[in-house]
Length: 339
Image 1 (cartoon, rainbow, N blue to C red):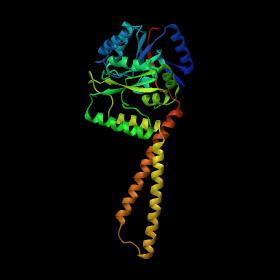
Image 2 (cartoon, rainbow, N blue to C red; image 1 turned 180 degrees about the vertical axis):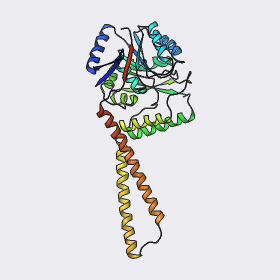
Image 3 (cartoon, rainbow, N blue to C red; image 1 turned 90 degrees about the vertical axis):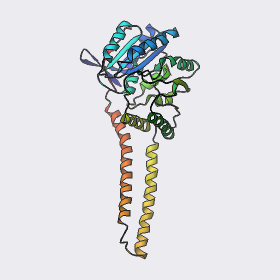
Image 4 (tube, helix red, strand yellow; image 1 turned 30 degrees about the vertical axis):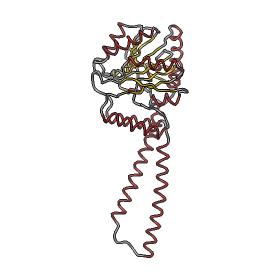
C-alpha cells in the first residue's frame, strides 16, 4: 500500500517496501530501544509539560529512545510548539505533520510506520495517562510479554464516561471475545514484531488495542494511574465514541450479522405461524372486523427490524468499500527529524 508525503507543496508516493527498507537502514545506523508515539490534536497547553515529564522518565531509563509526535491537523499553536521542540532536541524528537485530521488511530499507525524502537509505547498528549507509568509497561515487556495494556486505576472521568466504558467492555467481549479490561486506555506498549504486523495490515478502520491483541502471542495488562486532564477539552464526543464502537464491532466480529440472521429466521417463523392462525380464524370464525392497529404494530416492528439489519449490513459494506478504494490512510505534509 502506498502512502503520500507532501514536501514543498508537492506529493510523492513511496511504497511500504521502500519505507521498510529505509527503516532497516536507520535502525542499523543507530539502535533505538524505546519509541514513544504520541498523537497530537490541539494540545498547545499540554505539550511543554508533557515533554518535560516524558523526557525525565526516558532519560532515567539510560537507554536510547525517540519521541514521535504526530500532528493530526491541529488548528491551534501545536504545530509551532512541536517544531520548536524538535529544533531544540533534534536527536530525541521527531515530528510528523498531517495535512488534515485523520483521527487518533491513523496518527498512531503513522507513528508505528516511522518508529525505530525495539519497544513502542503509545501515549496521549493530554497527560491523563502519566508518563511516569511507562516503566511499569516496560517491566512487563522485559518479563516476556509482547503486548501490554494499561488499565486506568481510579479513573478521573465523568460518571457517564466511566460507566459507558464498562458497558463497552462487556459488549466488546460478547461480540469479539477479545479480553481487555480497559479498551479506552492509550497507554500501551508493544514489541517490535507486533508493531510491524500492525503496520503490514491493510485495515483502514483499525482499532489498535484490539488489533494488537489479535496479533500478540503473550498479551497482558498492568494497572496505571489516571489523572485529570491537565488543560484543554477531550476530543472525543458521543458521536466519535459511537463510531469507534462500530469500528470495533464490524472490524473484529461477524456476530452482529449472525445475530440478525437468527432474529430474521425467528421472525419469519413467527410470521408464518401468525398467517396460519389468521387463515384458520377466518375459516372457522369469520373475517375479523377489528385488529387493524395490531397489524400496523406488527408491520412497523418488521419494518424497523429490516432497517436495523440494513444498517448493520451497511456498516460492513461501507468498510469493504473503503478498503477497495485503496486511498491513502493518511497524507503527510512534513516530517521534522534529524537522523
